[in-house]
Length: 123
Image (cartoon, rainbow, N blue to C red; front, side, top):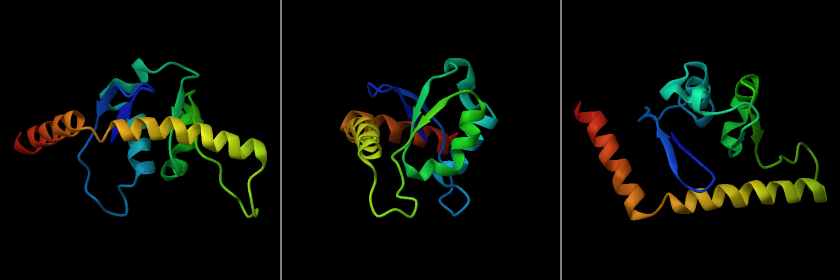
């Protein structure tokens, strides 16, 4: 799991995790916050905004209990389409996430992550 700032700066890397049904984005995020992995609660501030995708929906309550605001694209929730406000909110969240995710695909970042995971496996 990679935590980044909104400018794409990588703040922390936690993992690797076994790829199974129990290690999804939401359960990993819950674990990070509950166990204060890498001292995350000390470098985040109350009312900071955590931008996530829909895979984190089951961890939103846990993250909010620590005093953080969570922004995630909206769901239809049985409706045929989103309202204008919901669409604009979802677009805004998606634009922030897209900038981060597209930046993560650079060779420099990918090489750094491979180096990090190789060190974890060999130690």
